Image (cartoon, rainbow, N blue to C red; front, side, top):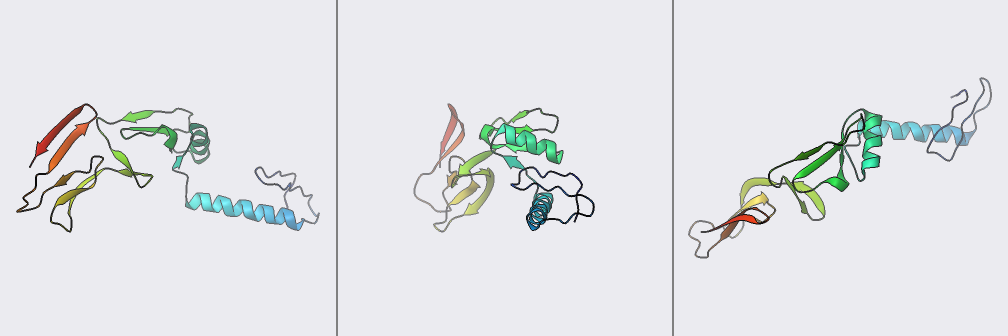
Length: 153
C-alpha cells in the first residue's frame, strides 16, 4: 500500500511514502489499524457520548445526531447535531430512570411477580399492585416531585 504524503492523525505513527518507496511495517500496521477502527465505527456508529464536545465532534463526523449523556435527566434529552446545535427535548414526566447504574426507558408494561402481585417492568417509583385476593394494602404513587397522588388498594 502506498500513500503520497499522508499523515495519520490519532496514531503514534507517521506514514509518508513516495511512489515506489518501500512502506515500513509500522506504517502498514498503523494504516491497517486505522482502517479496522473506521470499519468498526461504520458498523457500530456512535449514538451517545459523555460530553457535549465529544458528542458534537461525533455528530459532525457521522452527519447524524448524537445524545449527550452528561446533560440527560429523567425527563430531558439533549442531542448534538452536525450543525453544532444542542437542542433539548423535555417531557412532562420521567421517560427514563437509572437502574443498576445505567439509564433505562420507563416501561409501564405490567408483569406478575412470584408472590402474585403485579408490578411495572421499569418504573421510577417502583409501581406495584396487589394481586387477586391479597390482604395487604398496596400504595401506588403517581406523579413526580411535589405533585403526587397516592392510591391505597
